[in-house]
Structure formats: structure tokens, C-alpha cells
Amino acid sequence: MKNIKVELESIIFNVMLPESKAFLDELIEEIEKGNDEEEIMEAKEDVEFFIEELNHVLKLIEEKRLSNKDAKDMYKKIRNMLDEHDHEHQ
Image (cartoon, rainbow, N blue to C red; front, top):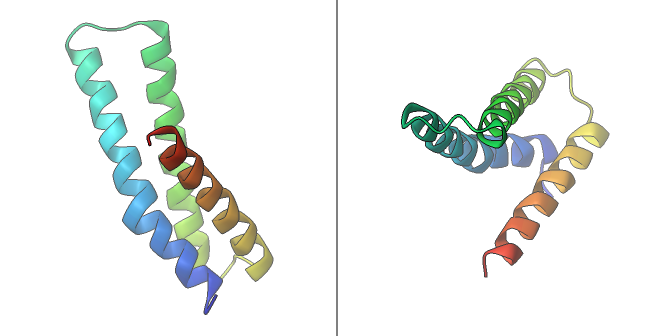
């Protein structure tokens, strides 16, 4: 892998954030339709927190405060999540 931090930044910015924001929009739409089930509300909070975490990681990369080891670990976790998600939807 050329530069793990560049790869991590790319997968967060180009995949994780857009997909998370799209899911959040779907949850908000459900809530606006009157679906305020606890499961929906908790999912919305979880996704909002996840988006904050992703943005925090991007900030750490930008400020050069993320080690290569931590970047590699995060990248692997994200790749695993994406691989599991793809496998579930095949």
C-alpha cells in the first residue's frame, strides 16, 4: 500500500461518509414520516456519532496526528466492514 493515510482518507471521504450520510438521510426521512420507533432513533444517533468519528479521523490525518499503525488498523477495520456489507448484499 503506497500511503496508508492517503488510502484511509480516500475510503472515508469517498465511501464511508457518503454512504453514512445517505443512510442518515433515510433515517431522518423515516422520522419525518412519523416513524419514531426506538430502533430508528437509536440508529440515527449511532450514524450521527459514526459520522463525527469519521470526520475526527480525517482531521487527525490532516493535522498529521495519526500514526501509520493506527491508520493501518482503521483502514483494515473499514475494509472488513465494507467486505461484510458487500457479502451480506450478494
